[in-house]
Length: 266
Length: 261
Image (cartoon, rainbow over all chains, first blue to last red):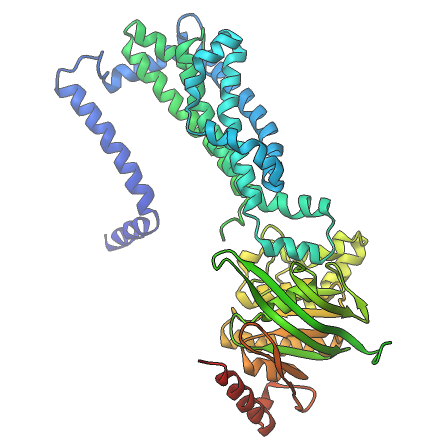
């Protein structure tokens, strides 16, 4: 009996914060079940766990409005990835160049400073005006949001490279090219990866917002369409899937971060 | 006309002026600093903080050229840029945090395109001479302060510089580790005989390690005293209690004390 207690004490000692997180989630789920079970709340406001799970199963087996869940999820993910990858591919060189060269920085800073406080979804009407309601307008919206953060983080990364590291490299005879590729680039990597992390989160929220306005498929479209036709449990299902996929995307980037920047901040 | 062929470093009337934005004025950091360092000599610079000790290192290294007048000669030739013949060891160790110990040490050789096999051989040699065996694959963040500084020393020495410029290299270490590093440095000097200019605020360190000590005045830094240190060679930590050491320390302390206001 006492050894069981000791065992439990040990589990608590090493995993207490994980356990607390699990308990916290379980508590909220329990409140949800309790409230929907014992108070007469319409499923149109808050569906009960059973209704929710049934709907979840339904949309995954039968799809939503004639399209499979896979089609909705993949179109959202593909749009995000296309805009995000383009932003990463262009934002890294431009951001690094701006951090490295004060002239380039002087050219782009007025624009980045002006655009930064504008939420990308404010551009939705413009983007529709310019590019229509096709795929390109959504991808370009993601690009606009993500590119700004990539550029800002990459240039901040270059500017944060400790002066001593640059002096050491020069002292040991590095050429300008070697200095860039062997010191400045690796030293800015943590900032670049933080940029990717922020840009990923922003891209995902932009695409869902963009799909709310104009789309024929995608998770944002599903949420909006379900709300329009008062299919509230589907709205909850859609929101939950958006949350889970956002979490998965972030975990992928965090994996990349741990792999390449384990040395950062230590 | 070169008066003495084994003079390695020579400063002639070096003055450094920089613009201070907050004071909105030109500040003289160094004033007519002249000295010579002979081949294989170890010379320390001591002085009150802010007197421009590190500036001298930066000027000789070629890091700092703005507002510098006078001449810096290495082996009789004027220097005008950074050179691998004069390698600096920083107080902050300045290791590349994303490179393993062996990669940090190999940095200079790699940049110069030395053959991989040759690099591996030399790195192994310097890892042994700086007591880093077993830590080749570690990253800097996994090392203690003293070990980091040994890696920095190995990274500098592997390039076989004729001159080692050390800017308070052991200043951030605890007393015990500092002592180990000083003995380590003396052992390495007996092997490789680089010419060393050491900036330090630790008088005992200066006496223990150097053949001569230069004392800088408060800003604008001028060299008022040049003090030869005649201690038995090879130097060992035991000398800190001998008469010559103690009298040398007393003299330097009284000079530095007189600078206090």
